Length: 396
Image (tube, rainbow, N blue to C red; front, side, top):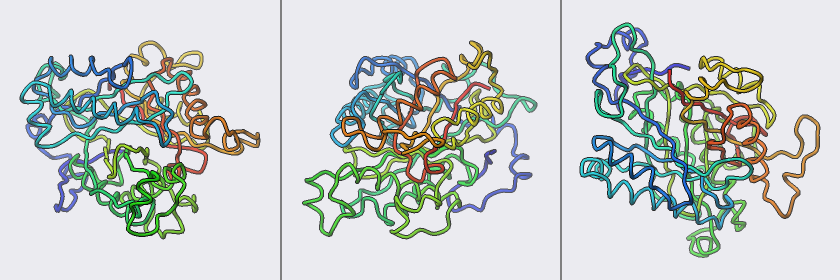
């Protein structure tokens, strides 16, 4: 998939030919997308982020993703702790950084659960002025300018408890994804990944609802919220043209190949980050694929091949591994995988999404050769049933 430039909310999309004729000066003047990972000693450890912000006072933070070491379930408060920690770090950053964040608040999307070898970490998404500290040293020329990473963000309104897991949530998500794509200069149909943070229901929220909720089961509410939001992404991209309430977390023939949704107690709205490629400066690109199931490492290798990331003996070479700056993935629990029975959905001691994260996290860590992976569990309508989308962010 390739992105397009020149799109804005309310402006008809430009043809590829017209977009390619955009002047070099316009392309070179676009902000440079920047992504950097930081390991952390706990959900409140944002020391690496704070240091980077001090060293890059002209940066505009667009979003921060995080894998936190909670259980990834309803009572995982590590996500909220981490989200508040990164927001505080941005607010206390150099004046220009903090002011930009006040004008256009960055999204803070935390995913709980670092089972197996997954490293607890943060992933910063920022934009830098061309030529600034941290941006690539050489600006693109007419011959080297190409499709590079672009970032778009948007948020929905707050949802009432009775709206969680409903068509209303899906439609609001659809609109937010479209806004995020417009901000990035992308048509939704060519975006590579849509990361969405969604709310869940607690017992208190169910009691406070003005109408009957989709469920009183708080753990089930996570799946319904993820499902409705993923179908919203599918509506935005055109992968699905219509949904009903009966489709949500039930009709898995309807799905998005780019949606990655994660539910948490720390929000009552959806926060959206869209990633894709478009003509512009910088040295980062993204490539994506969809795993058919938890063992579909072949799809991952095809994605690496398209990105020009070389491998040796079943793992990325050290040079290729050094070019990878982020790997995002959805992992879906399944009763069987290629005919073999699993206990993911019958284990009373260990929630199904935790099994899925551990399994897919280990698979991807072995392929890449490191464990800084954003693997999120529960992939309802996010890729085919039992599978899930994968995205690699890499230096071109």
